Length: 164
Image 1 (cartoon, rainbow, N blue to C red):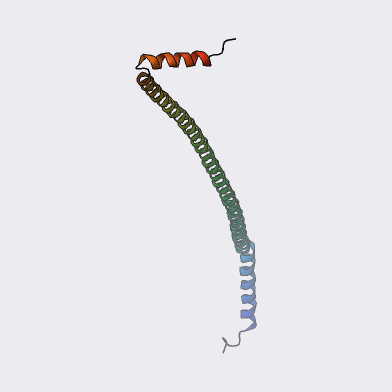
Image 2 (image 1 turned 180 degrees about the vertical axis):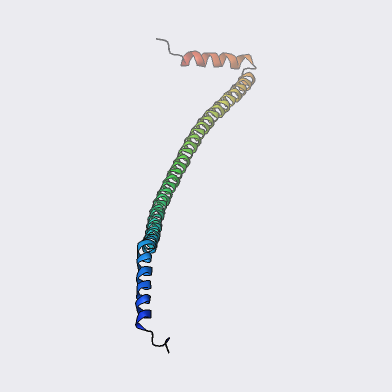
């Protein structure tokens, strides 16, 4: 029964042993354990702080990435709008140039047609004049074949000729 009911001496020596053990642990082990726990807490806190900083940097980088994407899209849109504007300007310039060239060609064609028309009219007039002269020569030849007709014609011309 001594184990169930310890004697006063056993309790006394157990308390002294416990006190010595407590003193040794408090003097040597406790500071190491508390320093280790504090060091581990500090290390964990530093890692959490680093993780939060990295997370903030990632978030910041994400925002910068979004801004850069928005700027790139805006720049792309501006470039496309400029290209579209230049294309339309080139189209309009080419259209105006083609219209001017067409107008010049039409004007040249009209001038050419006018000159050809005038040339044709002149040629027709010349041909008519030549035919008229040929006809007149033949008529005069035929009418003046005899001498009396010639003298009569000369007298008529002289009479019709008015001298001042």
